[in-house]
Each structure stands twice: as structure tokens, then as C-alpha cells.
Length: 210
Image (tube, rainbow, N blue to C red; front, side):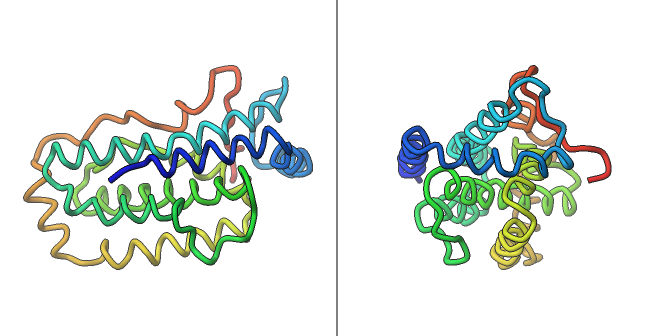
């Protein structure tokens, strides 16, 4: 499994944004509505949002590589591999549900799908085995991106992730295999999380009540 193709897609999207400023313009239009749902830095909120989005997108290949390495080390790679391949395919073969957006807007859709899929796997694992499977906690970051995408699109993508994951996650024998291979020790420490995507002076948080 390689993430080189994902990195190439991200590099092309960043070049497109540098040339056009299209996504920055989109965030500028959405900023008043985003202030209602997100706590943004007082100083240069748009710059903070752009940095958050770029870091969120760029964390996808690292997350996939990390989960690949840990699943091999702990002996459940054959279980994790289908989900990792799905996460890669969201970038390399985007599903039809995605619009014909270009640049960062398009890649953010794909990054959201990948991160939400890994979160879905982790959530199911915790419910079944009472411990995390993956060294990731992107829950708050995924909610922030949900609002950046808009509720209509984000909800469609959420349904796509849940449908794709359910074919593997709802099979009881899967959990018996994972129980036997993952060991009985504590789960992995969180290595990638929402807080790692921003500097302390650029923190973006959800407003209470959302």
C-alpha cells in the first residue's frame, strides 16, 4: 500500500490554490456563518482556517501509514487493510457523490471521507472491545470540517462512509478475529489528534451547543 498518489493529489491541489485563491475566497464568503458554529482566533481567522484545512488534508497519508504500520505490528493488518484501501480510494478514485470541485475544495471532501472512515472503524472497535484500535482522535477536527463543507454535503458524505464501513464492521466474526489478534493490553496512545493540526495561537474549536 502506498500513499504517494495521495501526496501527489494534495500537492496539485495546493498549487491550484496558490494560483487561484479559490478556496480562500470560498471561506471568505462563509466566514460569517462559520463564526456562529466555530470559535476562531480573533487575529486573522481566515489564515487560521486555511492552515487548519491544509494540515487536516496533509495528515491523511500520515494517518494511513501510521495505521498500516501499527496494524502490521499488532497482527491485524488483514482486518484493517480493506478500510485503508477505501481511505486511499477516496483520493485516487473519488466516488460519484462528490461534485466536480477543483483544488483544495475537492481534496477537502476526500480527506473528510478518509478521516471519517478511520474514525468510524475506531468507534465500532471501542464499542465492541472497550478500547481504541487506531492511534487517531480526529473527532473534533471532523466536526469542524463538517461545518466547513456545509451540512448538506457533509451529511451525504457521512452516509457514504457509514454504508461503506457497514459491510465489514457489522460482521460478528470480524470482532472475534480482532479480539484474538489485538491482544489484551491497552490500546495505542493517541498520536494524531485535532489539537495537532493547529498552533496554540490558531486553535479552532466548536462552539458549545453544536
